[in-house]
Image (cartoon, rainbow, N blue to C red; front, side, top):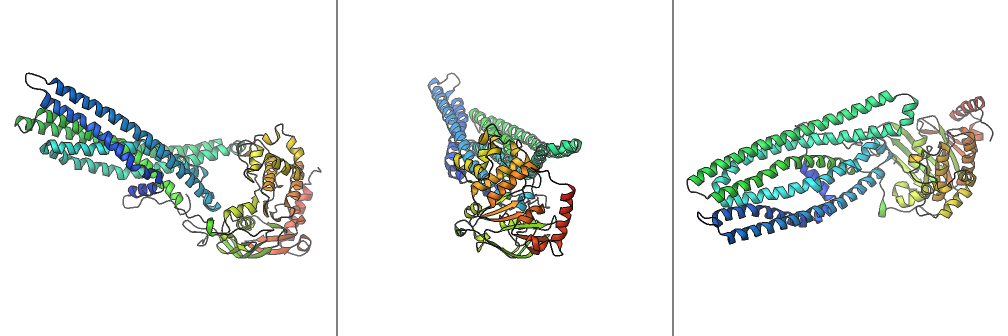
Length: 612
């Protein structure tokens, strides 16, 4: 689960404040609230048109029919009034449907964008703590559930609720005796609705959680298909998938069974209301207290009142699903982003080459519910104070878990420090606007992440709107035109899902060109040559030489040949900088660097690289 987000049902029976959730959700979608008065007005017209029909029936039976004759003129007028009411009702209902569809889709589209942007604003820790499929579900299926509610169930609640209220008002005007009969049984109906509603919202919240888990498991199984086949673990993955799918099925069946029980109880209670009205009406007609037309009209009005109650079962079922979906979206939006953009209150980085300085920087992993500054978890960096001069090339080395990657992520503000300051160009990185930071500071990860589309489209992500000619010049500047020409379609070559049509090294070459297009002043590299063939390694190394020239560069060095070429080496061990200096000095003195270099050198001699 996302850190500090999930709020389970309380132990006192699991009461969930659905109404508060809906109010908060509506406050985040002002488009819905702005159109609400017009929608309600259309609902009133549609509801009034339905109630006119029973009134017309009563008038025809009591005023248009006599023992020996029929007043056809009066009957005709009532028929015309009824037809007009039906036409107006149909038009009002159609306009209401259209309005709700347009308004809700606009509102929920904006909510999707807001949720998506907020997820991207969360720190890497928050994103890593949740399955990708679960985060995707928050922006897709959860909001789709809200859309279905607004366009169908919300409409049913609006129309049918108004219809039930107006029907009761007319019934009270016709016969207070029969009306009291209805009112005597109505509290039982309302109590049963409330009892089921409280349990349905909890059941549907569980269903939405299971949907997120199922999507996460499916996404992992699809993206990890090559590894699954390579290790022959299909049976285990199928079993895991079967387990999460079964959990979702069981939760959905429980919610559906509860909704079905609600509908059955509603049918039973509404039948009791109808029977009670029929008995009361027969007594009143026999005693001369009311007319036959009134009783007949009353029966129609009872149906207009109790039919919505039956439909409300389905509508409330959808409403609970929407409430659960809304709550899950709100849970994401409630997470304060650890890495927040200062926006207009922030500053831009100073012009020119950038130096970077860490002053007493400590980073601890936050426990659930903690921010970066409050974190009390495992320490990844502790008391790091080091300065890097502008245009210097610094290699960061150390064993796995020593703090190298944390150092790089703090330098690029993918995470924030628990204590201390990271200064870029003398400015606290937390005060720098993202628009300036992301333009001037770029990190190239080791895995070379690409997006579906062409090589050109992936390169253009480094600088949106860059011309094709400038992209071609970037390939020339990095000496990659020969490699690009090996593809029949050149820049228009499709890279596939996550760059699957290219090799690891080819993906890395595209990301290097993307970084060159961005033209950053501080470049952070997670060494790009540790998992490629020798020929591609030569291409990458030449491209890196061109890309790093004239820039401040931090390289997480997995192979110490990279560290040897750097101006300066920072050696990390257990979250601290334990050695700092050039290769020639560090390799000649006792310490972790010489130990790492000796171990690497033995491996390099044992497995020599092929010549280009």
